[in-house]
Image 1 (cartoon, helix red, strand yellow):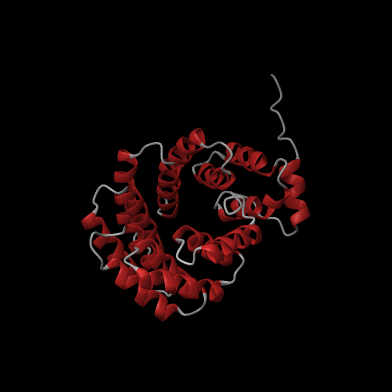
Image 2 (spheres, helix red, strand yellow):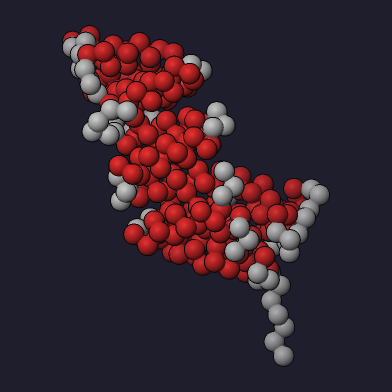
Amino acid sequence: MALRAKQFDIARQFATEALKSNRTDRNAVMILAHALLGQDRADEAIPPLEKAARRGNDPEIETLLGHALCKARRTADGIAQLRRTAGRRPPYLPAFQELAGQLANTGEIAEAIGIIESALALAPTSIDLQLDLGRMLVRNNNRTEARRVLTAARTIAPARTDVLTELAWAQLLDGAFAEAADTYRHALGLRPDDTLSRANLAICLMEIGERASGEAALRSVLRGRPHMLGRAAFAMATSSRGRFFFRPSAAAKFLEREPERAATP
């Protein structure tokens, strides 16, 4: 419970006490490692994970070890560990996902795509892997293929908001603003408080000529969330039919103002 509440110091203390009674307590090792990683103490998380990994074939422990090594700036060691874990059978899919993510972080996007594709060959119905592949393809600027993969994932899992928002982002980047707007609307129908999706919807609306609707969407993003001013101003400036303000205060004044109502004839 402490770990889920991000009370990392408390979680670390409990896990440390548990390990004093039983040094091979797997759950305590996992909690301790996650708590240390949450405190940006990856170096300290590595030794207990290495000991646990040596005790047996545990792909979850090994994957977390690979993550910790990478976070501790031992990227080569971390990737080598993740390659070994991804090579085990039966396959442990999170190891493929972690390996692909770490490779992408080093700029090896093409290899990361290949890793996810190899995982999909082992688990072709995995929506999570299809989503990861779509994200990697977007990062690799292959928007057409990304849209194909993510559209297929949406067909299988139409209620997955993460799939919808990633598909909408690929459509937006590809200039398919009307399609992206429809996809964002669907996502927002499932998760209305997603302010980033609403800001991106605003860009799409302005690009298809619905400037008033786009600005209304940005006003709803900013309402009660002053920290979103930069994102809202960016959305307006990004659109070819938006607005640009030299001062943040001017953008805030515009967005906080209620739109003028048309006069009744």
